[in-house]
Image 1 (cartoon, one colour):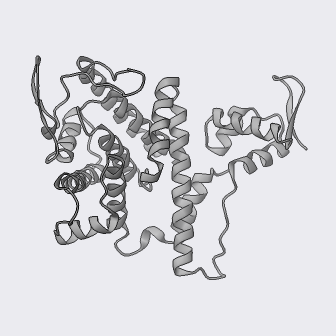
Image 2 (cartoon, rainbow, N blue to C red):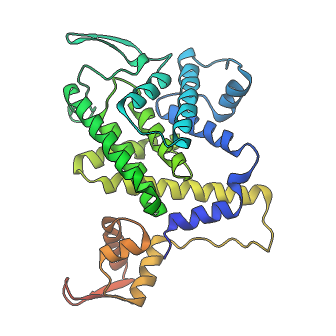
Length: 330
């Protein structure tokens, strides 16, 4: 059974949404606008289009905001080039991307261990707080080795990309985002870099790039914090999957509304996760949470939450012991 995400992507492409004139350009502008908005930029997608396409300075917007967006555009263009060429991911590549991203908004830092510049993409030589409960990111002296390990593992995973499902590929990119932002290699720009690297991988794999909308900033940050505190990557991956599903659904509905849809191509809404679980249990009540997760394309923990909710609502019941028993649809 196809996952909800897979069904939405198929519907998105069946409608030809990604085949529209200038789709790639405007989708990129949207990625940039929302990524910088999470960092405090107030520049809109329309304003970015004017600035990017016509070189016009946006009145009422600070030079720092405009530079942040312009620099991120250059960084994305380089990242897309890397993706198309399947360039190996190295520390030098990441430093180069960070230098492009922070070119006009980065700072010079003077520390007891020496000077470094975020504008040149240089790795931090100081410790930084995670901002919650006094916790800090890993010590600066551990960053180079951790970043080297990150690159090595990511390159190994990329070698197996052709054997992965769409859901597995997205999971790989979501994990890369979380792992990079957790290493926190730079004094500034880590969030934008994590989203950039995630999207770079998605471009490479031929996926629709994931967008974190500015309206979802709070939940996005909470999911990162919860993942770090519980040491459970599934939390962030499940959050990002739900965001992808929501954004794709919204874009599909907006497209259908704007252009209309003929009767020859009826809209078939993907089954909700809970409905898939109910359908699978009705066929085989002995399926475990892990087996259900594999069939649906989500984590076992997410399935367990759905099962508990369905049981509390009286839709399903458990017969027999935890091991050896079965689920029954009422």
